[in-house]
Image (tube, rainbow, N blue to C red):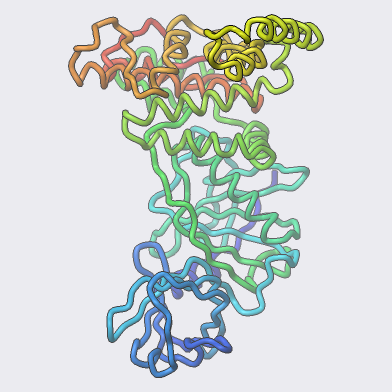
Length: 476
């Protein structure tokens, strides 16, 4: 692919100038906020708010209270007008009144008009995908060349993803497409890309996003902008793969050198990463599952294995899909129907007995008699995708009910009276093994062939659970 050219200085300068603060006048017909001057737009703690003189508001006959929300409020700066999408009053402390702004845009901006779009998301630090996703070289108006970029392909559309620093060395994630589309179309793709990056790299970009629209394909000078608050940024210590063996194998240089010399470790290809993003766009359950995985990876040991267990259960349903009947105890729908009918007839004969107290519950169980057990259901997707499970994998999968009912499984059979530290070791061990199993499923689903990190081995000194396994697990 030819090195693409990006024009980012215009957007960087706008964001930097906006965060310095602005002063203007509110305008909204038939509103007590109409005509209030000297309103200050401030940027504090990764969000924007506006404050103004409470006495002026009272003179206008204002009757707003804390918790009230005003929509479509114009903010005139003299040389430009912003429209505040939502203005939420959160503080009244005379002589000042404050409101938080969740979104605002330049006057005349349209969410439904098809335009060329670029999303710019400020980062607390660079997202490290050097050894996780295939990169390419690009040029920009801030640097002659850089290789901190990749792309995805969605239905023939190339969406480019790069990272750059402004002159103050602030990092930004930039996502853009040279296909004309509406804001809703583009923002859905950006959301999926953010989640995909967050899962693969362990760094979910968030907090705030700036969407710039362009009328020309070169995307040099933006025509309009739209700011909106985003789901909070999440940075975890977990990510599924790394093609640099020295990054994770720190206690065994001999093994790390072996992987390095064999050159068997590869990053995720653009095709595989595109498949992941496309699956996120098309399947809401999959999107929710990956978000759960990311958030669980940041959670405490009490919640982490439960989150992973729920994620594994949802992934099982997605993978099994229409294969459900083929994996059930009775593989024929007509036979299952006939069997249930005959069971109900037997139940009807006995239902007149005084000891049969809850016929409704028994009928419900008959209706679901052909369902797989929870344990079999969690193992089924691995069978469908041709992934071999180890005995240790099966042991952890079998502990699913413990996590969902608040119990700590005892993998070493040390007894319920074992210390808190030993229970934490069990939770830690289960977490890293469940996470590895989840990664095997997801990477197989998107067509990846190669090695993912095997965290039970990597963290065996921390979990105090030694395993006779490799540091990576191969997906065929």
